[in-house]
Length: 142
Picture 1 (cartoon, helix red, strand yellow):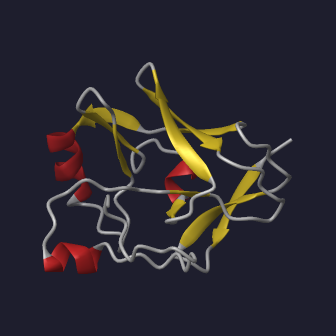
Picture 2 (cartoon, one colour):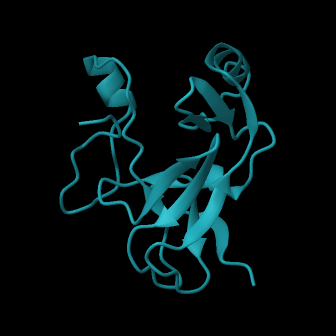
């Protein structure tokens, strides 16, 4: 039985939504796409100018998974400062796991915690719209 679907999100563009209840600790999805270098991924992103989307997920070994090339529905996960899922890296792969029980119909979120140099322009580019009670106002790492 399919566990998630992609549809319009009130937070930003598309989002990933639970089709059934998901349990805390449940492995829901794998972030898929072409595994490449940051240099190659940045070059290819220049040709894909989807507003507000890059679909890049960094790995601890310095490579990146480019969900825009060969990716799956996981690339549509939106950011929230009070995320209900987390990314877990295992053997060069990224899995999305529930951090709490999630109800059917609920949107799935991860905390992007982007680690890029901060400037006032960058902060504006990565403004958060999650609406969480404790929203920090940015998708950048605090």
